[in-house]
Amino acid sequence: MNILLLIIVGFIIGTVVITLGGGGAAFYLGILTTVFGLGPASAAATSLVTSFPSLLIGSYSYFRLHKIKLRIAWRMIIFAVPAVIVGSLLSPYIPEKIYQYIIGGILAILGIQTLFSKQNSGKKPNKWLAPVYGVISGLMVGIGGLSGGGPVVAGLLVMGTDMVTAAATSSLVLVVMTATGLVFHLSAGNVDWSVGLGLMAGAILGSFLAPVLLGKLDPQKFTKYIKPILGVLLVVMGTFTAFK
Image (cartoon, rainbow, N blue to C red; front, side, top):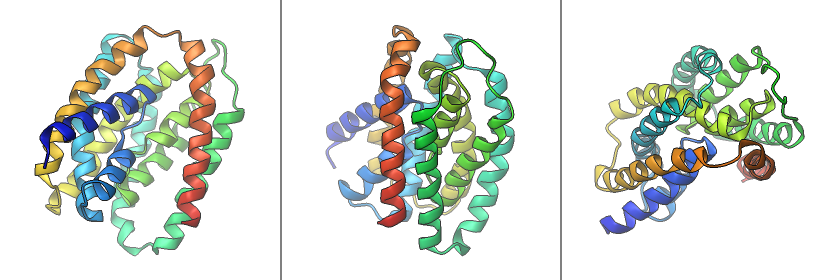
């Protein structure tokens, strides 16, 4: 396996997903299965292991820049972690087609909400929405081995935060959720370390760069251009997931 290629791929994905507030497990999952030929179980475990260190570093960097809304983050985490555990325990008993419809529908609805939601212009975000999106993202982590970043970021945008705040706050939520999901996936021994370590090295480098880039951007302008792109991507991903 070409270690340089792994580092480059990890760096690109790590920078993009930390900038957009996602853990990147879905991106890593696609790369690991299509490009590097890993099986589904090994790819799911390896993707979580790969994304966790970069999430940890990115979250710490955002914290130092005072970009994280801690109260909102912890409201999500309190409800997300039990959902990760429940999802992990239920996943073997859920028919694959039903799972596809559920996850696809959730992603599409979140995308539509993201497209049509308005920024709060300084008003306090609706605190009651945090538990709802926390549960949704937690179930995605537990059931599908995904990072759950899509629902967290979409939820924060719907609650009225700007994109920079959403990316920063979601990084902390995803650190805790990914760590919880790793407990279940590592116990199965499915991690392919020969691939994971190279991707991890590149992703760590990217996680240092992303918060610095976001710190130099205008939150209002960044949200204006990225929010519709994220919304469309969620709708497309949801449709593809439900009907593939």
